[in-house]
Length: 336
Image (cartoon, rainbow, N blue to C red; front, side, top):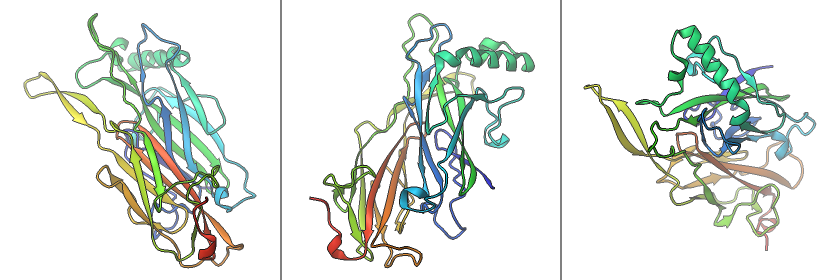
């Protein structure tokens, strides 16, 4: 059984492994894969002096299970283990907790879990105190806003056991936004998830696995022309945000930047023209195979296509297209 580490692009560098053979594009889904973890909302406000009951976010896994396209149908469903680390060593330390801290279980054994800051606040504060005692620093300084530090990044860890690949681990940074200091300070501006508002295949709305007969694109014949894919994003998806740093004179300077949205594309059949696009390229193409695989039986073959948008600061959204690859052109048409 092999163990894979997959980091989600939420302020981290993308490292997707276990994607098939060395000759397969990373956009091809031919085994169990973790595509993203969505957090809704994308960030929380971390204010130990004023915790609120609403300070929680739902973390949801977006993955590809071969069973969804009829492969490995007898394999047991995945098993999930969620946890979090208050201070992580990052990629240089294989995403382990910074000594002497440890991962804390989040509970939940399904593909989603709730991170409740009100419940976890005592644990996080205890971690900060323990680390401060080891490092010989003032605990309050670890969660005090200062130039260049506007959030406390908590690392979410998810381990998935799947019989086809073993254990796959992914981590996601959840930013806990620190409140500005002073009585007149405004509430911190938290990051919002970009929102995909449309996904089309060959000019038709994409079906999901649950809506294959709801007026959307449902089928395409083997060897058919390349299918056009297009994604639409809500206005304001790329937000403006401020970044502070200390200049050469020792002064704190603030710069306003705008997020850059990137789109990752995946398919279980055929090949997408672009594995990754940006906000200037919201269109892609899917080239379908000219014949069914030799081990495929039956007149149809299910296809799954995914697009994942990330803003580079922890915001993410995903959409799926599900349709059937068919033997004859006569059987391939949008549903009425």
